[in-house]
Length: 227
Figure 1 (tube, rainbow, N blue to C red):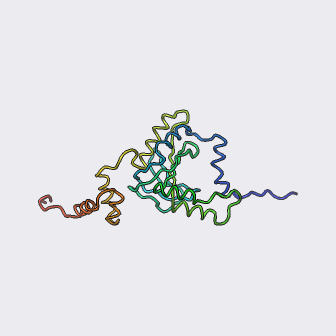
Figure 2 (figure 1 turned 60 degrees about the horizontal axis):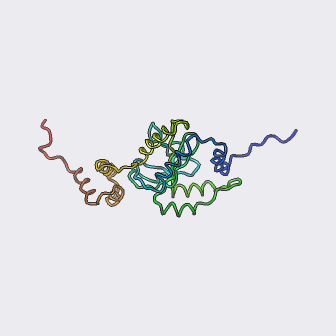
Figure 3 (figure 1 turned 30 degrees about the horizontal axis):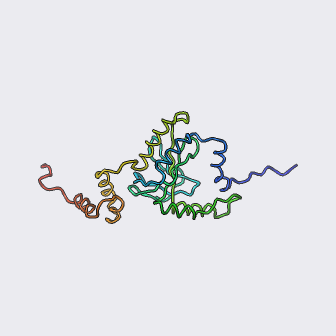
């Protein structure tokens, strides 16, 4: 008898080549012109986040947004970018069956420096530390958000509308947070230093202090209801 069938392990190199296989088979289900429109519109711009975003190691992407809302999926990573912080959109791409991927950095300078610093993916069997190396770069420098669409490829206008809706759940898309939203963030993050709250919300430090002080003051006796 011949040698028993041996199943080769599915290596990191194979995983990193999967997007190329999908492209070759034309399996993407988001119209390319729709993806290009959003790449032209939002790539290279900064936005203020509505949610906390976890890091990623390029093999597991935990940041998912759909019509059901924003949530984390699968393996959990430390939070890399926090609500109300500014992030830089570097790339918009089709990521498979009715999904769009956003590649995010803290700012444009980081994106330019980091893009050249990340080592090329291995083409052969991955070394023992390959996942650790890629994961370390990703967790420290950038992350990805996946937009899950319902609209079909044959309905590009519906896909455009759905992408806009989902973008608005990730960050303040073509708008700024109201003063009430900034104030609510400050009051729900009292443990954060005042200078950092001012930096994140874009409000002067004195205004941040006043918001915290006003909320900490007990109500005037005349405002209390008699029992």
